[in-house]
Amino acid sequence: MAKQLNIFEDFISKEALSGVLLFGATVLAVVFANSSLADWYYHLWHQPLGVTFGEHNISMNLHMWINDGLMALFFLMVGLEIKRELLIGELSSVQKASFPVIAAIGGMAIPALVYVALNPDNYIGFGIPMATDIAFALGILLLLGNKVSPALKLFLVALAVVDDLGAVMVVATVYTSEIHIEYFIHFAFIYALIWLLNFKGVKSLIPYLVLGVFLWVYIHAIGIHATIAGVLLALAIPISSKIDEREFIKNTRESIDEFEKNIDEIPLLNHHQIDNLENIAYGYDKVQNPLVKLEHQLHGFSAFFIMPVFAFANAGVLIDFGSVNEHLLIVMGVILGLVIGKPIGIVGFTYLLSKLGITKKPDDLSWSEVIAVGFLAGIGFTMSIFITHLAFVDESIISAVKLGIFIASFIAAIVGVVLINLAHKKKVKNIDG
Image 1 (spheres, rainbow, N blue to C red):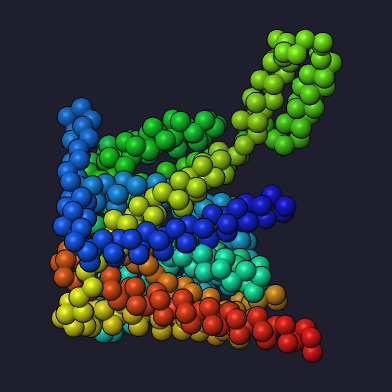
Image 2 (image 1 turned 90 degrees about the vertical axis):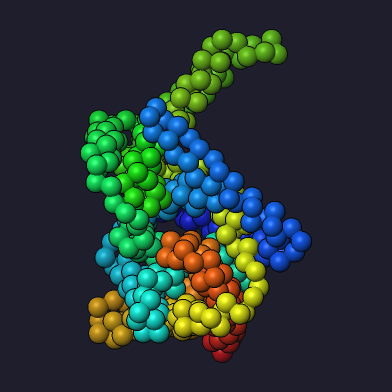
């Protein structure tokens, strides 16, 4: 339990700080896009870059490398989080998972329906208001400090994991280009090799990651969005370590005892002590769970590099409300989906099914906090922008939708903060009373 709590706290701190960094990258992108450097800013992301594997050549501009390449690593981390939560975390049992799962389903279904109701002839953008930017949401919780209860943080994170799973399914099934079935054999062969490594008990991450590159190449060639490669690879990463904790403790103690026995008067380590240290290092490497190890390594890289770079490359939008007026129903579908649909879906689904006895709200989580999380989940930001680029190709629509996402995320954040403050005051009043 203590280990799971430490993982959770580490997740919270990195995601929260990433939210602050994301905000800075977004502001910088908007400033560049509306300044004399706008031409340079837009030209930068359209610089062509290519990679050649034998007869295969992948050539994309810098913007696509970020959205298809770097984001594949982000989705690898997302996939690892989903697998961990399903196996040992907040989604590992029906009792634990039911409330956040129901909340996430409502938080995806209602925003999508709101969007489609306003845009029945242009429904392809329904995935945009379904998304939640967990980094930004947790960044806001960081700023609120001890006003935020641990139960609220846990609920938001569990909801976001399920939300990410929904986003993965939508990207894989809806936002794909033309399918080239001739590459399915290549993909299937590579993926079978990856799972063979798992079944054979291979714990080293290097062969998984090397094959993961080829998995990405062939999924990209098929026409499915290449970020799905990250999720599929994550599912095959083993969770069990090569040696268990007790064996590690036993071996480490023996090595430390031997290290102490070989202390001499020379102020340098002797070869016996060096051997003991190498044994400890060997055990340190073998006791780590491959899945948790890779997730930990990717988390900082994702939080402090991938997502800020993604935000800087994608958030730059010319502030021109003329495009908003031109595509008003699409923009309103996104705004209302995030600001109204998200809280209605999350609160409505959980409250109704709680009353029906299908699920149960955690005792240390108040309904006021559930409502607050409903609004915080309306901060779509980077994930909504990501899906916008998959849903539309018209730059005028993309610019208008981005402005709508900014407006909706700002409103959702403000309302969420106000509701958390009110919920905190209510709790304090009840305790004092």
